[in-house]
Length: 466
Ligand code: ARG
Image 1 (cartoon, helix red, strand yellow):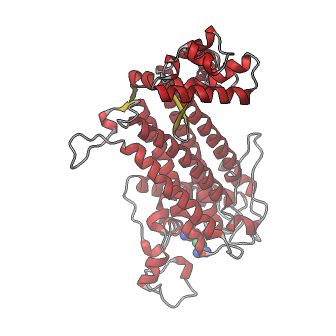
Image 2 (cartoon, helix red, strand yellow):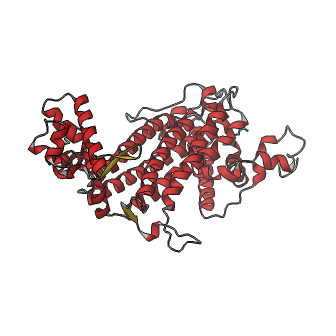
Image 3 (tube, protein in one colour):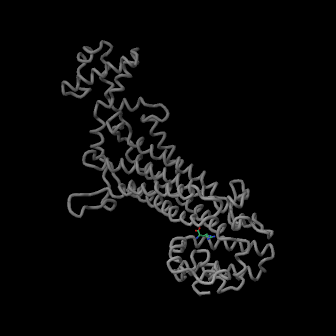
């Protein structure tokens, strides 16, 4: 048997794999990053093997020390990964066994099928927690920008046409709400990631009296009430990737939300809007046009959404039609998962940093928000308050808008007699409707962009995110 043959072929195979087979089947080039979690899982498994008498106390100590030493070498880049050993699991196990004879007992009642499921669950548990922190930081950056510009009003848009005035902070808080739902989904997903599959073996558990609860407890697989979380079906446990798909789905929605924010930033920073300015360090230049300053962070955040959505599709397609239970196809899951986690984490971080280096052009915002047409609906509401049915009021104000257009005036430049020529209901106070400050003070429904309400929401979020 060639030296280049992994332990999985020992005894049964006459030769090692052909070079191109080894290259085609290896996963070490990407699953090496599971090393820390692989070590933790192995240490817990070793403790359990000691508890049931498979390892002596001495052997267990030697194994744990050996794993620990390997961990230190990996961390400092000294460990030599061998592609011919296929994956992270066999690389670590065979190096351990080379150093510590009792390492040969470590794989008792364990298969790479339950091992890889365990490693990925451990890894993803940590990733979700880190991602949640990064999303919270992006939320804080949005709240800060809102607080710093709490008096700034901009046009709100529907169909990308000016619709009604809103506080800039109200617009920013809309994203804070979206991101909060993303956090809730990710945390919900975490509860299904946080279940221990070890002890499922290759497919059918083990004939040895493993203590699954002990392993799960050692690895922190417990719910909020401290109840140990174990997978309940060995076949499901080794082939289930729902938890990854759920994560990638929640991450895809997060990416979509960030992409929408990115799109707003890109519009706002354009000369046409000119609502915001991004600091030089967070923009890029053009190789040809010296005057350009481009919002590349936001563009890439928007662009990277494609791969995050693609990763979700890849995983769904990977699972579709797979017979029970573990199939090597499942090795294809990791790069998609890693890419999604890396991408949404980096995107959240960079968008937060960019927003912290963004200033608001108050003059341009005031100019845009000063467009009296934004208050046409308020004028209709005025007529409603005087008893006119809304449909009728909508028609009357439509006529007022048409008149303004025809005479080249803005709505608030029309004179009372002109309004009254359209409808007698207009009184002296009609034109007061166009006082923007007063208009904003009137929008006080829960969730509305009114002065008091937005201030309340900013305070709520600041407290919730601190
Ligand atoms: N590298 C494999 C994966 O990522 C580990 C499990 C392999 N199991 C097996 N029976 N070949 O899925």
